[in-house]
Length: 168
Ligand code: ADP
Image (cartoon, rainbow, N blue to C red; front, side, top):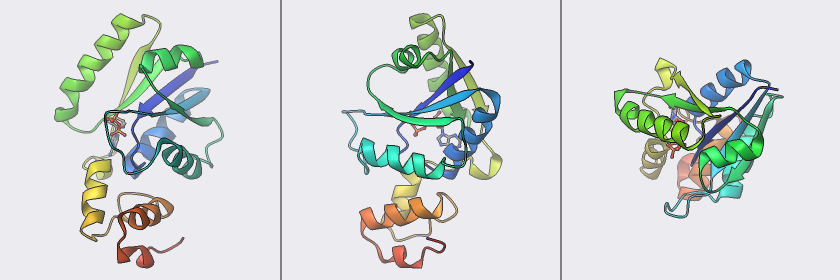
């Protein structure tokens, strides 16, 4: 059984994340999306909300499981019986940090290798931070996140755009 873990904050999940999830799920028998419960950051959504949003947008992919975790990604991999960590690379700015993390993780746990996916060009500029920033100015985030996620972001941020989101 080939298993991989895709760890991240997913605050909230974007179309860029979803693209990586769909492509990684095609490569392995089981993909576990690990939602990091990071005490240092103050997220817009609680870890339970982020897990539920991810479950919602990945329900069409049978070999994807979503779980919350805290601590080191490699420890979560070991707990899940996964031998791969999945990460996305958007631009060169991601590269330095991701390379360092991959090397650190490999030295912590020999049995876990990192698989990098280059992002789809049309999603390369999308980040959870940008989604929140645009929504906070009542901008249109429908190109960045699935409709049910856009609705929840506007509801949390408290803007009128919520009413304009189609298809929910
Ligand atoms: P983290 O806090 O771990 O960076 P994120 O939720 O921001 O968590 O990102 C999780 C992973 O998804 C990272 O590998 C990141 O590079 C990747 N990622 C983020 N945004 C995109 C995107 N638009 N397209 C593809 N991959 C992305």
